[in-house]
Length: 131
Image 1 (tube, helix red, strand yellow):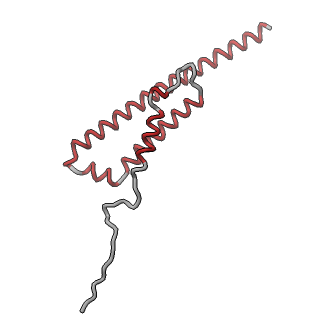
Image 2 (tube, rainbow, N blue to C red; image 1 turned 90 degrees about the vertical axis):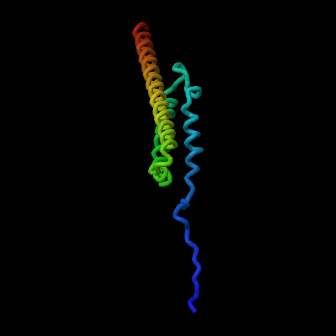
Image 3 (cartoon, rainbow, N blue to C red; image 1 turned 90 degrees about the horizontal axis):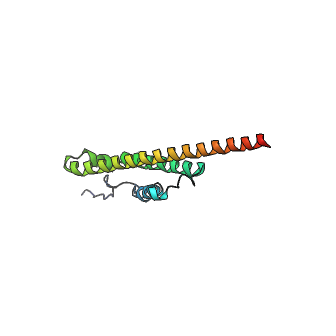
């Protein structure tokens, strides 16, 4: 009589580690670049501009990571999810647009800070000459 060997194998459909922790981190960085979290041009500093740029870079990296997940590829390849995929891609495009607007705002803020520093240097220079 042949003996039956029972073995337990891991399902190939289950990831070895969960990917969902990416989502809260992504949402955290997204909150940091919302317009109400932007400093006004008069209160912006180079460090806050650099921080916003870092957050944009993190968001870009999270989108890349989400798009590279095997589960994401499976969903994108299934025809029955075509409408859902379209909505997701529209959402990503909206996010890319928001990131572009945030980048423009940060760039403008950086220009304003640079101009302000230039004016202050010129003013300080003219005061030194008048003394």
